Image 1: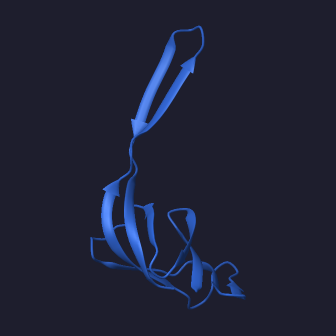
Image 2: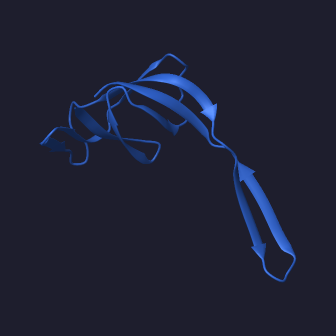
Length: 102
C-alpha cells in the first residue's frame, strides 16, 4: 500500500489512501478538496523516496469531512503552601480530513 508523510500546521502525518485524520484548522469548507504539496517522504512497500526537504511533484489530496473543536484541555497551575491556584482551559479548532490519494 502506498503511503506518504506530509507536513501541515507544524506537524507531520503518515497517511495512506482512505485514512481519516484530524489536523489543525484549515481555511476550507466541508466538502472541499485540499492538496498538500509539502511531502517529506513517500513509499510503496520496500521502495522509499525521501525529499530534501520535499519531494518534487508529489502531493497528497484530501477531502474536508468536518470542522470541529477538540475536547477541553485544562491547564492547572499552583504553588504549594502559598494559596496560589490558576486554572485556564482551551479547545483547539480542528479539521477532519479523508485522504483521497497519495
